[in-house]
Image (cartoon, rainbow, N blue to C red; front, top):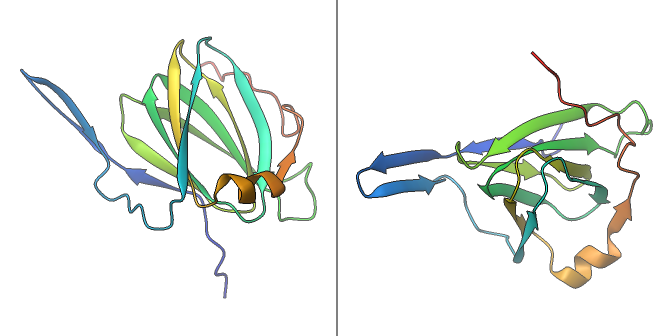
Amino acid sequence: MDTEEKPRIIEGNLFVDDRGCLSFVNDFDFKGIKRFYVIENHQQGFIRAFHYHKNESKYVFVISGSILIYIVNVKKNNLRNSEVKKFVLSSKKPQILFIPKGYANGFKTLEKDTKIIFYSTSILEESLIDDIRYPFDQWGNWNNDYR
C-alpha cells in the first residue's frame, strides 16, 4: 500500500461586490504549520530553483501576481528522469499548493511584483540542516509553452 503524501491543490475562491474582493481558502488547516515567510520578486521571469527538504513539507499561496512552479519527487533513484509536475498559481484564482517532504521545488514569476507566502512544517533551524540545492535547470528549461 502506498502511503506517501502526494502534491495537491487546495481550492479557494473569490467573492466580489461593490465593496471590493474577498479571497479565501476555507479548506486549509494550519495544523502542523510552524512558520511562514513571504518571497517577493520585482521582476517578471525571475527563477528561484531548486531546493529540496527530506523532512519539511510546504504550502504555497500567491498573494499577488502569478508563478509557474515545478515540483519533483527526488526520493526516486533517477534524479535526471524524475517526473516534473508543473502548476500555475495566481492571486486571481486562490489556491494553495501542498508540496510534501521529499519533493524539490522551484518557481518562476510570471508577473512583475509577485508575492508568495510559504507555510512550512519545520522551524528555521530544522529547515536549514535539511536543505539540499540543485541547479535551476536540473529538470529542464523554464520556457513558457506558447499556445
